[in-house]
Length: 158
Image (cartoon, rainbow, N blue to C red; front, side, top):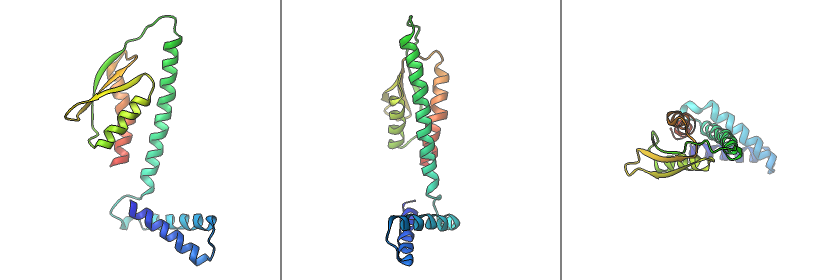
């Protein structure tokens, strides 16, 4: 992936030299032309086309923003409610992610979402312990985390 990015930047500089224009717009045009060339030649690379993970990272950011807004709304309803009708709990989330950075990213996304935070990671790194302020159905919370954050993190890393 890094090789493709470097090759794309080199192609952009080659375009700048061929066009005899050393401006930012010339670099952008050369970069886009290089991106097109690399897209056509993508089957000759051993790794996936380097732009694909960038789209998945953008997808992860959008999922996080959506979950952030939904969690803020849920916490706001709890705070403004006249009665405390909450069911806080601590539960274990089995992990499919294995690498340290994947576990850290998942833990950070969960902790940054209002109403939840990661308490600990098990010694064997097969599950994380999460506290949530309101979880009437723990299985639904586990399913939601696995299908949103964890699935997208696996798409980024694999």
